[in-house]
Image (cartoon, each protein chain N blue to C red):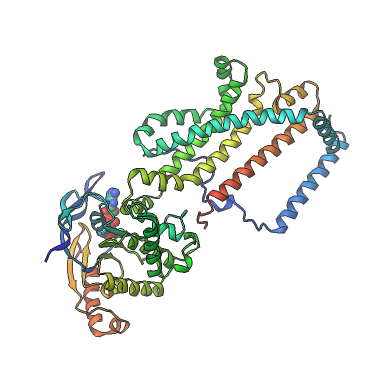
Length: 269
Length: 255
Ligand SMILES: Nc1ncnc2c1ncn2[C@@H]1O[C@H](COP(=O)(O)OP(=O)(O)O)[C@@H](O)[C@H]1O
Ligand SMILES: [Mg+2]
């Protein structure tokens, strides 16, 4: 049997999580690292690395961009694109992944396409998307959609294929029909894989954003950074980068939280 | 006397790269109603394959399996199966695991609950009814799996090395508990093990299998009365039967 390899770590990988009681020492070290980073940044800026703004300058710029509403508008525009593409991608990916995992025919028909498109970085689709879909919102959302679709579909498919056969047999010997087995065993058993796929998908969706916003956007974090680049406005670029990083982290943490809630039953070794 | 489970000339072959591999070679065996038989043999001799045919999870290449005189066509709740790997649904609590099979019947909700409660009580897991499997020890997991099988009240219990992964003390406790419930409810039990002591302690008949090809080597009667006790384990008669089984298992003429 040919199998796609799941993206990311197996959901059972213990290293992927930290318990709620994360040691104080680790938190203290994290804080220390941030402070050290800021100090080094300040030093680099003050000894005059060409055009590099210091943390205070960037903070001032951020204040400015927040005050005039630009940052919020840009962030919302970017979030809208990412969430739209991501949700469409995931909602389509999960049923298709289930189909591929459950029916050999569907797998045979769809696997070549999934395998092939997976090897193409979503960004490489941009020229094609522009030609076919113009320069509006559609090609941007499409590229993000594709990025999240491909990672979720593979993870779901892999999750279904990897469902423990003894669990399926345990349900069968209790008299469960195929339908019941699918709904009551396969779906819950593959949930951890799907959630991991979604996290990877969200990561790649977010990663595709800036490039997608290079396509004649009027607003968005990527667009703002592109504009700033024209004027050598490094502070704005930094604000954009930090905003992208923080939003990405926030979304990832939210999904992680959902994952913990939904898959707390998993045995960890 | 009518057999509860009857294997007639069952064979199972698997295609391999250079021809076919014979996992089971024309095995015939009758298990009486309410009988407790154990099956022992070296690993790979086809014990699981034989049991899975009665469970309806594996189809024989030739020959037939009858349960109550009716050919087996797929699995069914009349035959409870207990796997070595427990096979509990990890996202369900003990109670929900035990109710899983009951929900597939048309019993009213109240009756389902009552039966689940009773099965959980029978295996002594009442205090853990709302616990998730990941919080249970191996022995408790297997007791939960047993309760899940009992709940739908099957007439036949098929157990594939159910205590194989447990420590010696837990194993002995579960053996006694199993015999206890069996003496009350008298199901037909086919119990696979690789532990000769366990095979003799539980069974009225021990089926010794041999490998390559998988076949029945010898059937040894255990003429000890039920209930079996700890003293019996130490009795000379028990020792004699154990030696006989041991010899049949481990001094097989090479095929
Ligand atoms: N799907 C399969 N394909 C090929 N060989 C198999 C398959 N299932 C079982 N076998 C082989 O059949 C033999 C009997 O297996 P099994 O019934 O599991 O033995 P036991 O339970 O006695 O250890 C083993 O040698 C095993 O490798
Ligand atoms: Mg086996």
